[in-house]
Structure formats: structure tokens, C-alpha cells
Length: 135
Image (cartoon, rainbow, N blue to C red; front, side, top):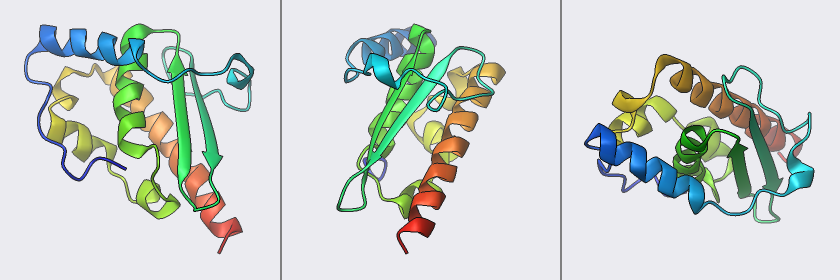
């Protein structure tokens, strides 16, 4: 989990949009088999998929994907923050505070902001279920 040292990196709109596209381009591969109903995230304007694998050490391997390049880049920021996190870290993660801290919040449209919230909420539900099953 890499959000502890987050600093504002998204400062100007045009530069921020270019950065999101670059993040989308450089995200780890999302397997075609993961694009299924189980991994689909509802409540997002663009199609979004979330794949989670819990490692033996209790940390998550998180992969996110979208057909929209800007949404995918935004998800990439979230993925960078939470990939490798524990269930407790995910459950306690405040996506709005994190995106505000790095300067991304102000560039998200209401629909994109809602989509990020839905992804985070579903990830937190998965993390809570994992924690309960492994307590």
C-alpha cells in the first residue's frame, strides 16, 4: 500500500489528464478471463472490472480495468494505492481523502467520482468478507 507518502501530483487539468492516460497505458495486464459478471463493478458510467487475489500473507493482489482510458487511469491510481494492502488497510481507506491529497479529486467529474466510490465500496466489501472468513 503506497498512500502514506502521497503528495500532490495532479496540479493542472491538462497535465493531469495526460498523466491518467499514461497510467492507463502502463497498468499491469488484466486477463481477459477476469472480464466477467463476478468481477464487473456496478454503478459506474463506464464498464469497470475488479479482480482480487488474496495472498497467503493476507495482502491483496488488486487488478482494475475499464474500457475508458481516463477511467482506467483513475483506477490505476487507486490500484497503485491499494495493491498489496491488507484487508484492514482497505476497509479503512478513504478514497476521497486520498484523491484530495494527491490533487486528483478536483479533476473528477461527479460521475467519475461516483464510479471510483463504487469500486472502492465493492473492494472494501470484499476485504471485509476476506477478513471475516480468515479471523
